[in-house]
Length: 164
Image (cartoon, rainbow, N blue to C red):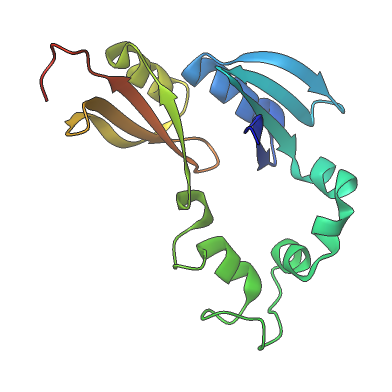
């Protein structure tokens, strides 16, 4: 199997697409369903951005499932299914290890010019997490968050003659 594209769900697909265009230079490839589905070119991968409403219309099983209902309503779930917080929506938002769902993964973008790319991302609305720093795995790395709170790594790989 080949990972072909990632889908980010959001309440504001056009806004999130503008952010990824301005912050990371991704270009729009496709826009459909009254701006509720947008595909961006992201190197060899497509980054798709989809509105929650469109997701629920095209994948009603997700909305009808106990998980989907709990997330949409925010109501407590039955005790046999509830986690340590007592309601499924809260537990899912925090994840199985007590970590926020937006911290259970990161999007990593190679950035050949981190000195220019990092301030560009911040100017486009990224939230600063960590300024660029050299890492022992021979990369210079900065961390930001997108407007929905997803963790984004900006990474410049060091050349052979550069030292950590």
